[in-house]
Length: 212
Image (spheres, rainbow, N blue to C red):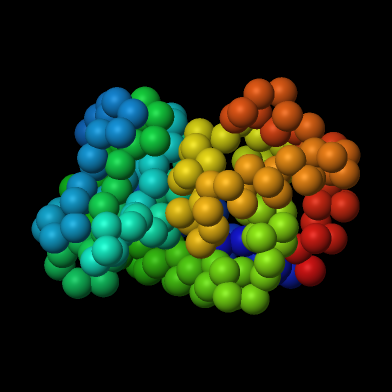
Protein backbone atom coordinates (compact mmCIF):
# COMPACT_ATOMS: atom_id res chain seq x y z
CA UNK A 1 0.00 0.00 0.00
CA UNK A 2 3.03 2.22 -0.12
CA UNK A 3 3.18 4.76 -2.88
CA UNK A 4 6.79 5.49 -1.95
CA UNK A 5 8.06 2.27 -3.50
CA UNK A 6 6.41 3.00 -6.83
CA UNK A 7 7.60 5.19 -9.72
CA UNK A 8 6.43 8.76 -9.52
CA UNK A 9 3.81 8.30 -12.24
CA UNK A 10 1.85 5.43 -10.74
CA UNK A 11 -0.64 3.60 -12.97
CA UNK A 12 -2.69 2.37 -10.04
CA UNK A 13 -2.82 5.84 -8.47
CA UNK A 14 -4.17 7.18 -11.76
CA UNK A 15 -6.74 4.40 -11.77
CA UNK A 16 -7.74 5.43 -8.25
CA UNK A 17 -8.21 9.05 -9.25
CA UNK A 18 -10.19 8.13 -12.35
CA UNK A 19 -12.51 5.78 -10.53
CA UNK A 20 -13.07 8.11 -7.60
CA UNK A 21 -14.14 10.86 -9.97
CA UNK A 22 -16.71 8.51 -11.51
CA UNK A 23 -18.42 7.48 -8.26
CA UNK A 24 -21.15 10.08 -8.22
CA UNK A 25 -24.84 9.36 -8.48
CA UNK A 26 -27.53 8.45 -5.94
CA UNK A 27 -26.29 7.42 -2.53
CA UNK A 28 -27.08 7.54 1.16
CA UNK A 29 -25.01 9.32 3.81
CA UNK A 30 -24.36 7.50 7.07
CA UNK A 31 -22.47 8.61 10.17
CA UNK A 32 -20.61 6.09 12.34
CA UNK A 33 -19.27 6.74 15.83
CA UNK A 34 -15.71 5.69 16.64
CA UNK A 35 -15.49 1.91 16.89
CA UNK A 36 -18.83 1.24 15.20
CA UNK A 37 -18.86 -1.64 12.75
CA UNK A 38 -19.58 -0.85 9.09
CA UNK A 39 -19.77 -4.50 8.07
CA UNK A 40 -18.63 -7.84 9.45
CA UNK A 41 -16.92 -10.90 8.03
CA UNK A 42 -19.56 -13.06 6.39
CA UNK A 43 -21.99 -10.21 5.65
CA UNK A 44 -23.43 -10.14 2.15
CA UNK A 45 -21.76 -7.60 -0.14
CA UNK A 46 -24.60 -5.24 -0.95
CA UNK A 47 -22.90 -1.84 -0.79
CA UNK A 48 -19.66 0.01 -1.28
CA UNK A 49 -18.60 3.08 0.65
CA UNK A 50 -16.73 6.33 0.11
CA UNK A 51 -15.19 8.07 3.11
CA UNK A 52 -16.35 11.68 3.33
CA UNK A 53 -14.90 12.46 6.78
CA UNK A 54 -13.05 10.40 9.35
CA UNK A 55 -11.29 7.10 8.68
CA UNK A 56 -12.01 3.37 8.47
CA UNK A 57 -9.90 0.30 9.24
CA UNK A 58 -10.43 -3.04 7.53
CA UNK A 59 -9.19 -6.08 9.42
CA UNK A 60 -9.48 -9.81 10.02
CA UNK A 61 -9.50 -11.66 13.33
CA UNK A 62 -7.04 -14.56 13.36
CA UNK A 63 -7.80 -17.96 14.89
CA UNK A 64 -5.72 -17.14 17.98
CA UNK A 65 -7.68 -13.94 18.60
CA UNK A 66 -5.13 -11.53 17.21
CA UNK A 67 -6.18 -8.80 14.80
CA UNK A 68 -4.54 -8.16 11.43
CA UNK A 69 -5.34 -4.75 9.96
CA UNK A 70 -5.21 -5.00 6.16
CA UNK A 71 -5.99 -1.41 5.14
CA UNK A 72 -6.92 2.08 6.27
CA UNK A 73 -9.28 4.29 4.27
CA UNK A 74 -9.13 8.07 4.43
CA UNK A 75 -11.40 10.85 3.08
CA UNK A 76 -12.05 10.45 -0.64
CA UNK A 77 -11.24 6.73 -0.69
CA UNK A 78 -13.65 3.92 -1.57
CA UNK A 79 -13.86 0.50 0.08
CA UNK A 80 -16.22 -2.41 0.60
CA UNK A 81 -15.93 -4.41 -2.63
CA UNK A 82 -14.33 -7.84 -2.50
CA UNK A 83 -14.20 -11.00 -4.56
CA UNK A 84 -17.23 -13.22 -3.98
CA UNK A 85 -20.62 -12.41 -2.52
CA UNK A 86 -19.67 -12.13 1.15
CA UNK A 87 -17.17 -10.02 3.06
CA UNK A 88 -13.97 -11.72 4.19
CA UNK A 89 -13.05 -8.87 6.53
CA UNK A 90 -14.48 -6.55 9.16
CA UNK A 91 -14.65 -2.78 8.66
CA UNK A 92 -15.18 -0.23 11.39
CA UNK A 93 -14.90 3.50 11.92
CA UNK A 94 -11.69 4.62 13.63
CA UNK A 95 -13.03 8.06 14.53
CA UNK A 96 -16.47 9.56 14.00
CA UNK A 97 -16.85 8.94 10.30
CA UNK A 98 -19.26 9.97 7.56
CA UNK A 99 -19.67 7.61 4.61
CA UNK A 100 -21.39 7.91 1.26
CA UNK A 101 -23.11 4.55 0.76
CA UNK A 102 -23.72 3.19 -2.75
CA UNK A 103 -26.10 0.27 -3.33
CA UNK A 104 -25.81 -2.83 -5.51
CA UNK A 105 -27.46 -1.23 -8.55
CA UNK A 106 -24.98 1.63 -8.53
CA UNK A 107 -22.13 -0.85 -8.11
CA UNK A 108 -23.33 -2.78 -11.17
CA UNK A 109 -23.63 0.40 -13.22
CA UNK A 110 -20.09 1.40 -12.21
CA UNK A 111 -18.55 -2.07 -12.48
CA UNK A 112 -15.80 -0.87 -14.83
CA UNK A 113 -14.78 1.88 -12.43
CA UNK A 114 -14.83 -0.55 -9.50
CA UNK A 115 -12.59 -2.91 -11.46
CA UNK A 116 -10.02 -0.11 -11.73
CA UNK A 117 -10.22 0.40 -7.97
CA UNK A 118 -9.95 -3.34 -7.33
CA UNK A 119 -6.79 -3.55 -9.43
CA UNK A 120 -5.35 -0.54 -7.60
CA UNK A 121 -6.16 -2.18 -4.28
CA UNK A 122 -4.47 -5.39 -5.39
CA UNK A 123 -1.32 -3.48 -6.34
CA UNK A 124 -1.27 -1.78 -2.93
CA UNK A 125 -1.77 -5.09 -1.16
CA UNK A 126 1.14 -6.62 -3.07
CA UNK A 127 3.37 -3.69 -2.18
CA UNK A 128 2.31 -3.96 1.45
CA UNK A 129 3.35 -7.63 1.48
CA UNK A 130 6.79 -6.63 0.20
CA UNK A 131 7.14 -4.07 2.98
CA UNK A 132 6.06 -6.54 5.67
CA UNK A 133 8.22 -9.34 4.31
CA UNK A 134 11.46 -7.56 3.48
CA UNK A 135 11.82 -4.38 5.53
CA UNK A 136 12.86 -3.80 9.12
CA UNK A 137 10.72 -1.92 11.63
CA UNK A 138 12.25 1.50 10.88
CA UNK A 139 11.71 1.03 7.15
CA UNK A 140 8.12 -0.11 7.68
CA UNK A 141 7.25 2.93 9.78
CA UNK A 142 8.99 5.29 7.36
CA UNK A 143 7.14 3.79 4.39
CA UNK A 144 3.85 4.02 6.27
CA UNK A 145 4.35 7.72 7.07
CA UNK A 146 5.40 8.55 3.50
CA UNK A 147 2.34 6.69 2.17
CA UNK A 148 0.00 8.65 4.44
CA UNK A 149 1.72 11.88 3.46
CA UNK A 150 1.26 11.21 -0.26
CA UNK A 151 -2.36 10.09 0.20
CA UNK A 152 -3.05 13.40 1.96
CA UNK A 153 -1.68 15.49 -0.89
CA UNK A 154 1.93 15.71 0.25
CA UNK A 155 1.13 17.55 3.48
CA UNK A 156 4.07 17.47 5.87
CA UNK A 157 1.89 17.51 8.99
CA UNK A 158 0.04 14.25 9.57
CA UNK A 159 -2.90 13.97 11.92
CA UNK A 160 -3.11 10.23 12.49
CA UNK A 161 -6.67 8.97 12.97
CA UNK A 162 -5.38 5.51 13.87
CA UNK A 163 -3.76 4.49 17.15
CA UNK A 164 -0.27 3.05 17.51
CA UNK A 165 -1.90 -0.32 18.13
CA UNK A 166 -3.68 0.01 14.77
CA UNK A 167 -0.34 0.81 13.11
CA UNK A 168 1.31 -2.15 14.83
CA UNK A 169 -1.46 -4.51 13.69
CA UNK A 170 -1.10 -3.18 10.14
CA UNK A 171 2.69 -3.41 9.92
CA UNK A 172 3.13 -6.71 11.74
CA UNK A 173 4.90 -5.10 14.70
CA UNK A 174 4.28 -4.72 18.42
CA UNK A 175 3.02 -1.44 19.83
CA UNK A 176 6.28 -1.18 21.79
CA UNK A 177 8.28 -1.41 18.57
CA UNK A 178 6.14 1.25 16.90
CA UNK A 179 6.68 3.61 19.84
CA UNK A 180 10.42 2.88 19.91
CA UNK A 181 10.81 3.59 16.18
CA UNK A 182 8.80 6.82 16.38
CA UNK A 183 11.04 7.92 19.26
CA UNK A 184 14.14 7.04 17.21
CA UNK A 185 12.92 9.05 14.19
CA UNK A 186 12.22 11.99 16.47
CA UNK A 187 15.70 11.74 18.03
CA UNK A 188 17.19 11.86 14.52
CA UNK A 189 15.14 15.01 13.80
CA UNK A 190 13.45 13.23 10.90
CA UNK A 191 10.03 13.91 12.44
CA UNK A 192 8.67 15.93 15.34
CA UNK A 193 5.66 15.21 17.53
CA UNK A 194 3.13 17.85 18.45
CA UNK A 195 1.12 15.24 20.34
CA UNK A 196 0.59 11.47 20.18
CA UNK A 197 -1.45 11.72 16.98
CA UNK A 198 0.18 14.69 15.19
CA UNK A 199 3.46 14.16 13.34
CA UNK A 200 5.43 16.79 11.44
CA UNK A 201 7.68 15.46 8.68
CA UNK A 202 10.79 17.59 9.30
CA UNK A 203 13.13 15.89 6.81
CA UNK A 204 11.02 14.20 4.12
CA UNK A 205 14.02 13.22 2.02
CA UNK A 206 15.63 11.48 4.99
CA UNK A 207 12.37 9.70 5.76
CA UNK A 208 12.01 8.63 2.15
CA UNK A 209 15.58 7.33 2.03
CA UNK A 210 14.77 4.95 4.88
CA UNK A 211 12.21 3.22 2.65
CA UNK A 212 14.71 2.10 0.02
